[in-house]
Amino acid sequence: MSYYGLMIDVVIAAALAIAIFQAWRLRVQIERMQADRRDFENLIKAMNVASERAESAVKSLKETASVAGDTLQEQINTARGLADELEIMIHAGDNLADRLGQAAAQNADVPPEKEDAPRRTKAEQDLQEAIKTRQKR
Image (cartoon, rainbow, N blue to C red; front, side):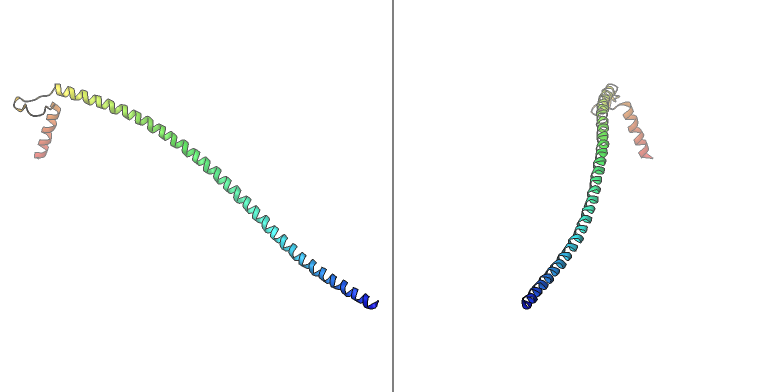
């Protein structure tokens, strides 16, 4: 039995050696997995921080866009009001110009020898004479 006993001991020793080698490989793999897990956790933490920053930036952009939109709308409303006022003033100016033109035509002072010349008001004639006098100097 001694030969069979020795062989069994050798087989058991070989099985133990293989088991020890496999346990060592498993330990190395577990250590790598734990290191990778720590790296993965750090990556997740970094992604969470980046996500929070992005959410904050988006919220800030929305608030800024809202404020800018409100300001722009106020300026548009003001511009529309001013445009309406300007249109009223232009119409009033046109009406005033028409009335002044009619009044000027009624009060035109045309010398008898210049019937073909366009009719001018006294103010236009005075202005024209002042310009001629100024040009002569």
